[in-house]
Amino acid sequence: MSSSLSLVSLTVLSYELHFLTVIGTRAILVEREREMQELTFIVCLLTVSLFISVTFTSQCSAYGLPIVRDISELPQDNFGRPGLSHITIAGSLMHGLKEVEIWLQTFAPGTRTPIHRHSCEEVFVVLKGSGTLYLAPNSHSKSPGKPQEFSIFSNSTFYIPVNDVHQLWNTNEEEDLQVLVVISRPPIKIFMYDEWLMPHTAAKLKFPYYWDEQWHQTTVKDEL
Ligand SMILES: *[C@@H]1O[C@H](CO)[C@@H](O)[C@H](O)[C@H]1NC(C)=O
Image (cartoon, rainbow, N blue to C red; front, side, top):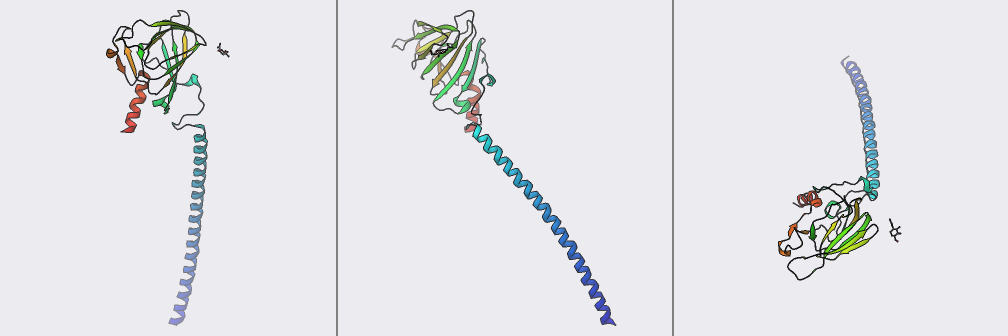
């Protein structure tokens, strides 16, 4: 009697076990399926982000800038000098250029640069308008002295030899003067003169120059 009872209970137990196993397997299968779905999702996500980063990298330079940029969409500012518009088209501190820097500058009638010099080469291309270049060739005098005057005009070009003191002036009362400027050895270190007879030794160094100030701070911060 007791043995048949225990047989029954054993059978019931084995059914229960079987039932539990079935439920357990189903639970594991459901879990697996969920994991697979998650895995597929992650793989998809990785593929998409890889695709985006490849596409992005192929269109961007080291500083994360697009290779081709619309100049009319670049930031421009007068940096506290009324009548000036300055755009750094390609910059040292801004974009990481090592050898040259290019600006696009527009001077409203009557607007001029300070009298200044710098130990880099500078090439100008006049895109629009006209004006006057004042240039004091490098000499052994104590001060720049009276500069030579040159008329500049649309589609003209000129370069400023290293350390020659100069000033650009839109002397045309009607039109803006627009120039494309290329400098070597950026970022620029400018020595400014109050007037042509000011001694070279009294010229004031302005570094970083106005349009480099913001980028200079960021660069220094990055280095710290
Ligand atoms: C500037 O000069 C070049 C060379 O002669 C000429 O091809 C070009 O059309 C000129 N540009 C303007 C705006 O006059």
